[in-house]
Length: 613
Image (cartoon, rainbow, N blue to C red; front, side):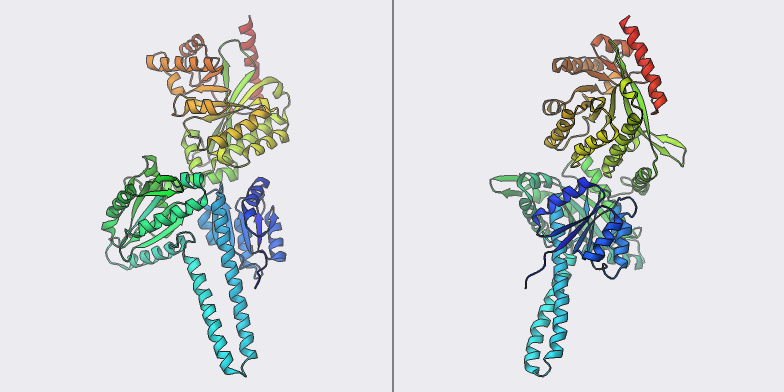
């Protein structure tokens, strides 16, 4: 029996995200429906009855959670599966709570999206077939009661088929479709039973331990050899891991390159982790003519009576893996209150909520700092800086306290886009500023470079506000490793061709300076303030600055020195041939306003006039 072409409803208020999803799903034989807001999504779902909804969380008006709640409350749409698309891990639990079936993290991985969508469509198809079989079965029972022998024979066949469908659906609901291991939902149910058992015990000793296992180089295989090789690696890794377990150990794949083992022999957890790393040393993954040696990072988290939910356990395990990876690959790290304490855990969790609330309620503030010409003067150059307003303590929080966390929680892209929009809006409202400004520098996280379509979004925003592209310079920090040089080069070249400029921030502090300078179109080098601040008293730092200036001169690239705090440092930089200085000696950062920019523009003009005379 031929099956109708499935329909997939994509709901997102960002055209670029819709384009990416459409291009990703082109390989799947399905009709794609598009809605750019929640109200339109509800209308299409009720009228056209799609087989699957890909639902963005952050949308104006009705957000994704409200749309899902209404879909599940309407009998006409209640059984339509919903996959949430989100950049924030904290949205996942809320999404499942309002009826979501699955989730996709942003920036999306095309192979993961296609696999999850195919899985849900297959499950939907099986449910439809099961309903049709049930209806057909009821009709046949009424129609064929006269011929009992034939009816009984047919009934046995169809009941077996229905049982197969039910078993298949139950299997799909609790197992991973790549490795055939238990999935996250099955692990959740298993852990919840163990926690309930633990709460009933009289002793506080934990009945089990969980190992969270993260394959370190999975992305390398998946991107260099393709998703088929990636899936085969996951299957082989699952077999390797399964061969090390005892009878009764619970093995699951959580998604991506993460696996979990729950053992009711907690004293064997560390031994199993060491055994797995030893087995990986003797094993390699072969694909065509390539061979890969792999390592894994393992977190060991005991289940005790302080745990109240599976989500809490996963949060502790994720935090432990994060800290282990920070120390290097191939690490085993047990969870202990002294290393990943409850206070630290609450602080990390609260930071995610603080940053999301700040974006939602407009609590970020923009400051700026003037760059001082150290030779012949010139028009005003400024760097814009982000601050976070804390309404509880009534004070501003410096970026050093939250930028790394924003990158970790995948919120930095939203902050970067918000800041760019605010700066462009101010300049666009005051055209006279474009005559007084020589350059406005904005920091851009290397994490943001991974977002598809970002260059087009930046150019669209520049055009929307009527700002000259050559006014903008984007600073990219060298110490934040750029994961995909080709992707970064494409992004930078697109904006460079439009007139924008780029500066390599914290030059000299990272490990990839020469590769970045060779591969990426940087216009300016900014020397890390660590070497500048005390260069008049630290000969080694002065020598480092001199060598960086000499290199920049050979590359014919201007140099900016940050953290200039004294007149003696400023004079020394002039003698070395540094063109621009930035620091408290020249200008204390202040809130970005039209009046403040005009005042600094007048000071820059006065300095240029004095230099000429």
